[in-house]
Amino acid sequence: MTHPEIVLAPGREKSLLRRHPWVFSGAIAFVSNGVRTGEVCRVLSADGKFLAWASFSPKSQIAARAWSFDETESIDAAFFRERIAAGAALREKLGLAGADSGCRLIFSESDGLPGVVADRYGKFVALQILSAGAEFFRTEIVDALMRLPGIEGVYERSDVSIRRYENLPSRSGVAAGATPPDEIVIRENGMLFSVDPVHGQKTGFYFDLRDVRRKVKELAAGKRVLNVFCYTGGFAVAALAGGAESLLNVDSSRPALQRARRNLELNAFQDKPCELRAADAFGELDRLRDAGEKFDLVILDPPKLVDSKSHLLRGCRAYSMLARRGFELLSDGGILLNLSCSGLMTAELFQKITADAALEAGCAASIVGAVRQSADHPVALAVPETFYLKGLISVKRGSNTAMPDRLR
Ligand code: SAH
Image (cartoon, rainbow, N blue to C red; front, side, top):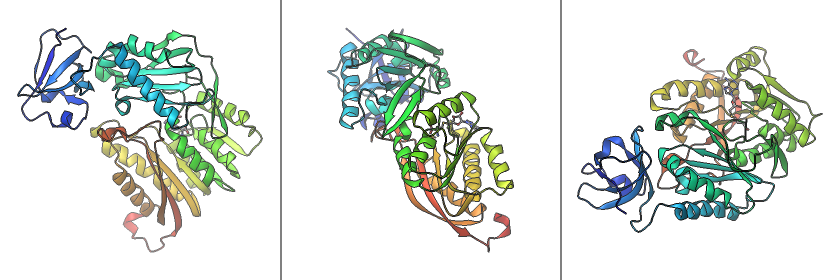
C-alpha cells in the first residue's frame, strides 16, 4: 500500500530526529493531494529521507503527530494493541494495577500514543481521544483497551474543549462493553475514593496527584488545614488519614463537594471537623484573610490557569495572588503546598512567582520539598511538554517587618 507523504521544509527535521512527535504546520513544505484527516503519512525531510509515520491533522497548528519513527512498522490494529499493552504493563510494573485500584493506563505522547488518554477504574476504562490521528484509529484503540485483562467496558469522555483545536466535536458515552455504574470505589494507599467516570471532571479522578496525596498525609498530623480547589476531597481524605486536626475545604463545584462528602464517609471520617464550603476560591481567600484566620497547612491546587502562551502573564498573576494569600493565611512555621498543572508554567518560573508572593505577603519562607505528577503520568524525555504538574512545599519562617512599603 502506498502512503501519502508529508515533506518538510529544509532544516525542519531536527525535532523528529530527536524523537519529538510533533510537526508544526509551518514546518511543512508539501502534503500529498487528497490526504484524509487523521490518515497516516510518510513524513520525509526536504532531501527525501524517511523520518516518521504520522497522522495528518489539517486544522491543527500541530499538523501531524508521529506514531512511529521506524520505517518498517505498520500503524494498524496490532500496533495499537502492542502500545496499549505496553502502557498497561508499565503500570503493572509500578504496582498500580490491582483489580480494585485505578491509574492512568495511557498518557498520550508519554506512552507513544499522541492524543490518547486512558484511565483505569477497576474493571472500566475512561477514554479521551484528543487528536485527529487518534480519532481516525478510534475503533482500534477501543478494541485494544477492551482486550486488556479484567476490562469490562470502555467509556468515552472526549468532551473536552481542547478537541476544538483539532476540529473534533465533543463526544461522550459507552464506546464498548458494559456501562460503568455511577460510583466506582478505588483503593489508593489505604484510602478509598468514590469516582464517577461518567459525570466527574475530566475522567473523574486526578491520578496525577497520587504522590501529592501521600505527601499531604505525611504533612498533616495535628494541623489546621485549608484545602482550596478541593474537588472530590482527595487531599481532605489524605490529610485526615494523616491525623489533621481540622480542615476547611473550598471548591466552586457542588457536585464535586457532594462526592467529597461521600469520600469522607467511605473512609469513616464523616464525624471529623472537616467543612466542605461551596465558594469561589479567590473571594473566599480574601474573606479568610480579612477575618484574620490562620492555618498550619494551606494547599492550593487550582485548575490550569495558563492554557496558551498569550495567557501566561494573566495566569502568573493568578498563581501569584493565590500563593500570596496562602502565605498570609499561614501561622508562623506553617506550610504552603501550592501546585500548578499548567505545562507552560516552568518549575523555575513557578518558584519565582512563589518567592514574589512571599515577599508581597511580608514573610520569609524556605522551600523544603517539591512534588510532581505521579509515575503513571511518565515524562517522556524526548517530549518535555509531558512534564506539567509541579508543586512547592514552603515553610513560613516569620514576618519581614522591615519590608519596603512598595512591596506591601
Ligand atoms: N485538588 C483536587 C483537584 C483540583 S481540580 C484533587 O485533589 O482532586 C480543580 C478544582 O478547582 C475543580 O474541582 C474545580 O471545580 C475547582 N475550581 C475551578 N475554579 C474555581 C474557583 N474559581 N473557585 C473555586 N473552585 C474552583
